[in-house]
Length: 278
Image 1 (cartoon, rainbow, N blue to C red):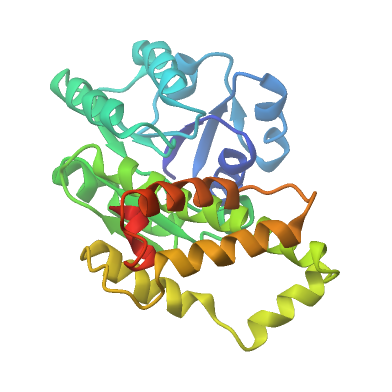
Image 2: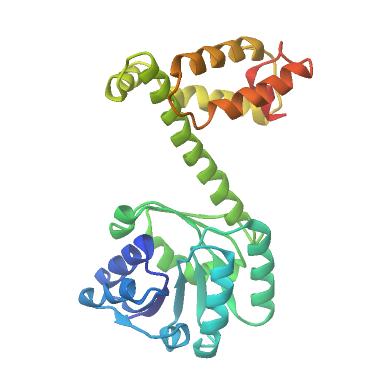
């Protein structure tokens, strides 16, 4: 039986713990809000009072925390109880530069630290589904790999550059959150035209934006701004969208309009809409 520790038992951390217990691991947990850790006791988790107590005897220490500051605080608090052979696997979404600096510092001090953010929600975590990214020393990744593979359906090792998994995680979340804002605005435009959200989604039965995203993003990455949809024409459409939405709240269109106006003022209205990335 593998003895592991989880520090941070919010929605995602708790789901990871339930899955680990289901796989037969011995799990000790800690959370700053003690009730969240106590909720895992009926599943078989041992609840510790401090981070140092949590990691005592653990061969793997998983962090599922809020931000860089909480990661630093918790690592400082757990160090007195950390086994010399233990590896810290940090799933927290963090700032890339700070993550790289933290990894270099900790590993230089003899503390094995690997950054492994995830594209996994609580439901998927309980089923050991989703994507785990990893970056850091390859030797540490190879040690952690079997355990990480049991936690998700896909594991992507991005190499030894310590900040890279953090960067990819933020890029991915940028896409996910932006899509949410775009959908909200699409519903607002529909509402302004008397089309309810469920009816607006009927568009997806015959129009697939994913193909457009894939093609245009490749052109943008290559800085190919030869026009297939002129910026000036796209700006007209954005005006129509905002006029149609009327008093409906908008999440993304105003910012998009401002960026388009700036590029048109710079004389680039004849180029492709992708020029807003330049």
